Length: 487
Image (cartoon, rainbow, N blue to C red; front, side, top):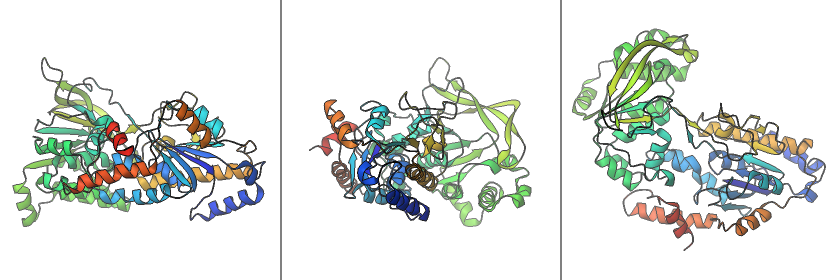
């Protein structure tokens, strides 16, 4: 996904950016004046990081690998969290600006190289996110019935590459490894009443699979303790209040937690108090009645790490998971999980590994830290690669929420402006920008999808959803998307 910037104009509330911009316009950009050098900048990636960087750049061309924009806002946010997707309205305003053009269906690294972009633009910003999976690194993780959270989320959110996932939900117990918000999203989707889900934009095949699901118990496993849990209170509260479910915790996991409360920062304290109340307190009469009628259960399991996924005898599918029992050394966020030598086996028919996404290298010419799975950078400036920048998860690793991505994208934009102003970024040579890239794509038989083409897809999806009482029913293949876009 690329966002190209044939001429640069920042529209941000940041005073510092405005000051820097006025200096660039007043004093020229580096060694050449703006009127003569017409700065060209492109951004690879149209998810939140790409669009937040693009919000500063009014004159932009956006190139996207898929025929549809918005990245993880479309394919990562849970279907029952429509309010989180409201940022799409802001991104749409950016994309529909008279000086902005969107070109979907263009795969950077295959249809066009980073080197070719660098020849066409003064600066290239990489914002293509994290589409790889972190491996558990244990025997049996390739067995049938084991899925990454990234693929599982992609399946229920209509990501074309995950359409064929078809997870087997015929078991009673599912184990989710990891205790972040994505892990809780997966647990909630597995246990939510169909009447709730059918009013969301979850895909129809997923809805049908969940209606037939036999999963009645979900365990959410973490290597450390309650005080180190990675989810937010909003996600936990949703689990606690999920209709037709009741919590199932191990009281011993919370030993000493109450005493540690006083030293916790406020957000962590509130989260931990809710966990303690859910796990240990006797509920009131109304809640007791609700829980007694529940047909499904969920619970955290702390101080556990996966050792091996266990197979059914003579079969290649999962029968359970072996967990190492840990103890903590240290306290607070810095506490480390240390093996005790003990293990326990948990029978289950579904394992979802939610231990993190990771970025992948896009092009041999781009520096890449394979250990950290990021492009090495300083404030968004790619190390040892003049004119190359990065933002979003590719810059920081897969951490934080959309607001975190927004701020780190703004920082990258600031770095670009500073480099233009100081002359660090060589603006002396005229660059062709999107003209040369469009010619290359045409020569290679690549037909881009415009934003008005995307609006046709958007319109069809919303009409399909309306007929089912949903906000949208997504097209699930690239072929379907292109057919709608170009007819």
